[in-house]
Image (cartoon, rainbow, N blue to C red; front, side, top):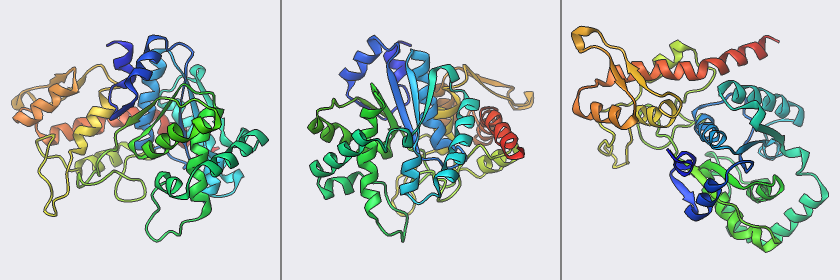
Length: 332
């Protein structure tokens, strides 16, 4: 595939195509980032954007991972010492997962977000941005949580981080779209250029296919999971023999999370996928593309349980290095 296709594959949105094509024409040395609030253990949401960072490293770009300790502090996630310990565990897991250490710069937010220039720009952005606009960009609050001033300042800092990290491209899930649009709309008022953005999908809830897979609600897959944990979780996953299931009884859209995990996690990291089956059931199946696997599930050639067993095996291969690193860090 060409560089633009590599940079944009498995994304839901490209803002804007012309800007990203210009980067694809000359990607060497260009800087791309994702910001992560330190939370301890990487889960599939983190790993989906990490897959995109690996693609961009392959394209020749330099990756910046913002370990957003100040953001975590504003979100009440502990003291700075506790948050930084958590961030260092995350750093080790990202490298174990496959980010190239020589092409990846890990940056603490506190290393620049408390500097005078940054703070003055943040205050200027506060003056330029209406309360309603900032509220539209802020993260969705958990049920029963009281909104605080810090929740409104948080997205303004995210927008400003893109300038202060000297970036050429910003990456995030579709849940970060509002923040990135705030950045593109408001930073020019400070005399800064807006940057292009790529947005990755939000995976469906593992057990129902409705709504999003979440580490705070329902079941998710993380680097803490053992091979047995992965098999158990995937066995319970919603997996109809189609990529386009009917809505549930309440009319909610449903997706096939097993196929999504193959699409966004397995095929980007493996050249081919082998489904092991006894000869009496047709023998092994080998897939060199996601589309071929999806088609066989639709036709009945691939049984959902065989798909689940294969998915659990490949996820374990992806997660095992990070799981081992976590165990090593905890032992010390």
